[in-house]
Length: 388
Image (cartoon, rainbow, N blue to C red; front, side, top):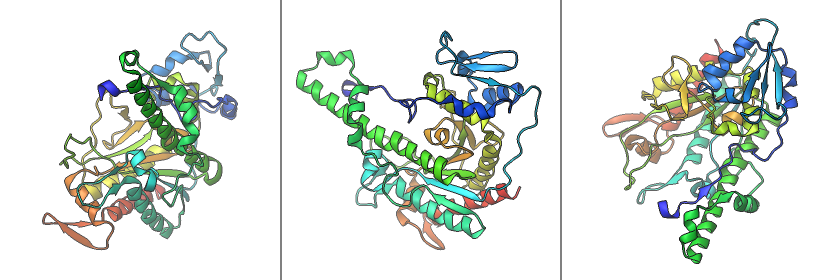
């Protein structure tokens, strides 16, 4: 890949070109104490301390700046509560639950790189798996009185944009390494064209699609809790051999990295997430669901190293804080689920069986439908969280 690798200027957020409107945070003035703000910032949202390069604390306030130089006017000044205040009360109810089945699928699955097939086996599309779980989970949650919304219930994009709509933007954002100057002109032209194509696709299925779902949730559905449903996978070897490893991870929002904080829109979302006071409910829901998933699936947790982009935020070994586009852009508590490695030997065979009632045998062991196991475990954990 090295010779043909094109360096792309990846947008840090789905709204990188949007004007940042910090005035929306004025309603949070004097609603959080300095100690609580600092605790959330240092423990959950930016444990590395990278955000402090853009902050200037006053006697009872903090100003956020666009650059570490802090020479331009501040983007926003937050006034702290004059004295320590108790945390805001938990939401009175969690009756409105949104399920966000990850990815688009269908004709878009190969573009999303969420598609694989081995020989003459049934192809695996992650979007299909996620939507199957979402439909089952919706039935289970509605049976116990919840009002459940799906961000999508088909294999079509939520966004009304398509890759061609981003061609001009992709051409602006593609950066060609100087090494390409030594390439023959035709070869250079071909590689740049391919890089532009890849960038238009990324802007469509990742940036535009996730942003459209966030708008749907924030402006129309307005749920009490959002669950992002996914399956995970481990990196393939060169021969795409199935693996023995199989793990579980659950994400809450947090752990903004230094590279991400260069964008003012990202700083705005960090402040919004802190000030909306969603973390305590988000963490409690994640803790309950992760515990139920681990009990049902009997999977070990994912091990993240110091550069893994995720950090532990409580004693639950399955729950990590990570700054993902979905849990950053969606308002309120968001729990992001990634159980199972799709390319694990047993998981792969369970996926090949599809959804079914009862059990089926794999290698001498009896297994329930993997989709029902997933949906039942989430429903059990969520019920325990809601009834706390």
